[in-house]
Length: 371
Image: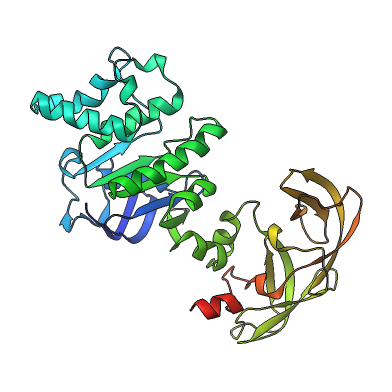
């Protein structure tokens, strides 16, 4: 196993900067996920670690060894791509053994490595079959097995589940988590799906426009996003953003006025806030309640999705280009055209300044006790 250290790494194609000022340490044995929208640079960053893309500037070290100019085959990494890239004329055993045969390893060693990897991935009963006889999930396991047999220090995964249907993706997320628990090897995983990131990661790297926006555990990014981008990207359904004006703010909280004149108290440290400045109130759909004793927000329902375990209500609200989304109990009696008096607990209010930077949320009682 090995850690991965990137120091002041950047990437440019001629005059176009693709990645800027990447400073990051992936710890030994960690499962780290790179997440962000299409075009943010996450796959390029992974390919630079793999050695498939040159580094324009900065330093990349794997296991303490600088590898900027080291060929991919000598970096101690194995990469699994979005495409399975299996040889159709070979059975599964030969697909997984191909790289070891090229390295001229002894036959007994190859047999042992393939059988062990196949057992870990639960495909040991399929080794005589060819790829066309397999499901998408089984083919992906073969691609992963081909990486495992090389016994790399670092695994790299580039959107490996994007070709699978929704149900199989859920199952394979569980398989990836179980694989990491069993191998205890450093893994770096790229996805645009924040649910995958939240499910799998020890820590998540959120990227946007070639920069790292924030690094943290899933719960840290959910509860303490650094800015509007991270707050809007992490969480499903996504956070609501309501334009507001800061009435007052200090280290113990803030009071803001919304577009319709309603006032909301936020449990945030707003000591750096300027009264009268434009701010943005963030509210996650799951934090609204039908008990409006705290921070009442009046709205009208325009559409309802009854999902069984929850009810998604989409509502009109002044100043919003998109509907205000609230997630309620699945047995909620809410219907289209209902008028709702929603409550929003101050402890679950997020607040951002006019530059999009988050005001730190104050610790809730449970958080303070845990600390």
